[in-house]
Length: 273
Ligand SMILES: O=C(O)CCC(=O)C(=O)O
Ligand SMILES: [Fe+2]
Image (cartoon, rainbow, N blue to C red; front, side, top):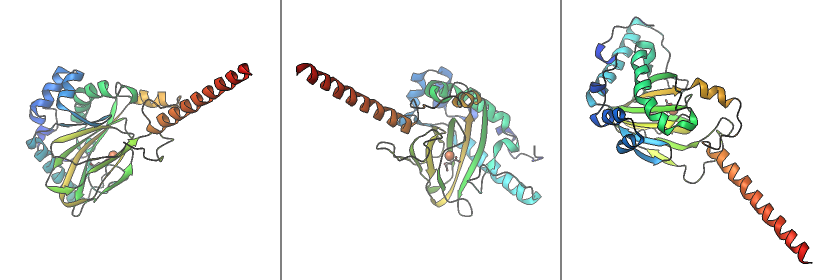
């Protein structure tokens, strides 16, 4: 744990009324599929977008990260970057936000993922990796095509003013099929909106297009389920969520139906002769 002096102490513990928009709070309090759906769009199966954070909280978090970056620079501290893909950004767990993010996952993400992501470990999320990514001048520009080390990912745009930076999604895949072809209907591009979140399976292949002007900062929480990962080791067929497993299964069934039809026709012809 670093010895970093916070700028805004109040964002280090969960204060739901201050952090979240009233519509998001209401939906989570009601805690039903209908209440979640009432605030969400589902532009592709399993991708959910909704308004989530208050502008003031976004501003404070962005300033806190800037302050942290300055402190790291001044003290010459060497910090871990969010993941192997990003040169900029910071791991929020490392500078004191772990318990706030624990609450964010257990009280606000888990209730939603329990409803929408039963097939991919959404009922048993038990750890997270929380970080911010930064794009723009003197920052990262874009992010290549990848899957997250997560069962469920929450990605929230904090701001600021920017253009570009859209996320592109290209279908959910298991480990074996991560590089398989994109199927019709799997192409979806999502433009970030400050304060708005997108919730997606970590295994939904995606990347971020170049941020062409301004600066963009996003808060990202990779949520993990150790139980799901353990179960996965003993399975081979992920056709309930992997697009390629599903396609292969359908193809096998189609061939089986054709072969059965042929067999029946052959039998019919034999008995007629
Ligand atoms: O730039 C973004 O909004 C996406 C970042 C992302 O996908 C990741 O860090 O895993
Ligand atoms: Fe990602």
